[in-house]
Amino acid sequence: MNKYDWKKLFKEFWPWLLLFVPSYFIFGIQILQRFSVIGEMIISLLPLIIVISLIVQIILGIILFRKYQQKLALIFTFIVSIFLTSLFIPQVYDYYYPVTKNYEQTDNSQVVSVLSANILYTNGDMVGLAGKIKQLSPDVVFLCELTRAHYSELIELLHSEYHFSYAPTSAMNGYFAKSRPVSVSEIKFPQDQSYLELEFIINGTKYEIFGVHAPPMDPDSAAVKTSYLTNLESQIKSLSSSKELVVGDFNLSPWVKRYSDFVDNLPRGFTNLGEGNGYYATWEPAANLGLFVTAIDHAFISPSLKINDFEVVEMSGSDHKGIFIQMR
Image 1 (cartoon, rainbow, N blue to C red):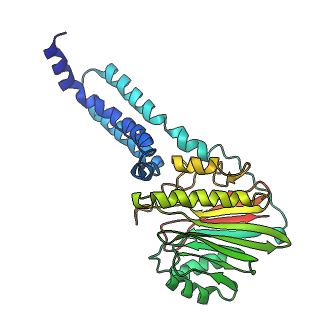
Image 2 (image 1 turned 180 degrees about the vertical axis):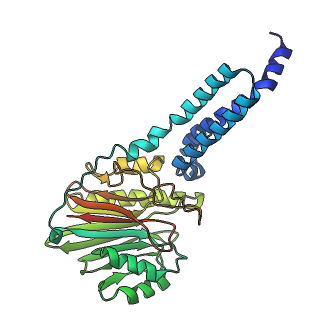
Image 3 (image 1 turned 60 degrees about the vertical axis):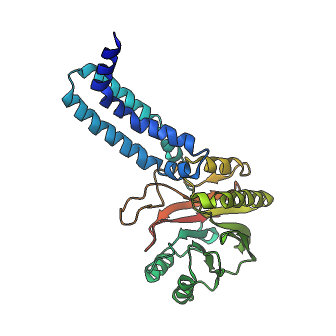
């Protein structure tokens, strides 16, 4: 076949190559996230990207099938392109499935409940938020993106049930509790970032609760986020004999490499309650879409903790869902 024939062949069939673009795009961002926070931000939406990619490939395949005569060759190309995109599905599926969680119910008097939520700093519905808290009635509530205005309003709305609370003036994290904590520590980082470490003794049992709001996924916060997660790992390891709950907005999806690195550095036996719990998502990245597409809020527990229940719950006025846990 001469040079002219190759040019003619490429000109005629180059649209077929478009079928492979979604697969190459996903593969590219898998590599990019190792070198750039931009890649990390994109890969966080992997479930949505896979769905969109498959839809685009199917639509494009139908268009090409109607236009070209080489049906068998086109079918083969289409199947291969779909297969390549499908190779990324286990990366998401294996986090959620198979469902292995089977929570053991016990005497409620021995159960401690915790609610964690990013309430969104522009949230104007504190009445609805307080109503949700009262409905769930957790022993401890950890809230992030909690402004001073939010805090002041919630104190008024929750004071009859939650007599103990705290919110620092800089970082937007805070807690409300029904019982007095033994100790409260705020570990601070640059850019007004922090996490809370709370110690409670409830029903005669000591609990350590870390309230996390990790720096966001953007290039300006990359170095602070590394320092934040490294410090958090060290602090968790120093208390490895306690009943520990590490919960909050990590700004990390389970298919991000930085998430894997964090999990690998946790003490042996720590588990993410969301893993093997069926599909759930906690963050809607674009307002008003009504589509929660990824899980960036997590709850990790030490081996000594037993779980009665784990739920992902709606939070009024927020782009995040909350995490509700009953433990003992």
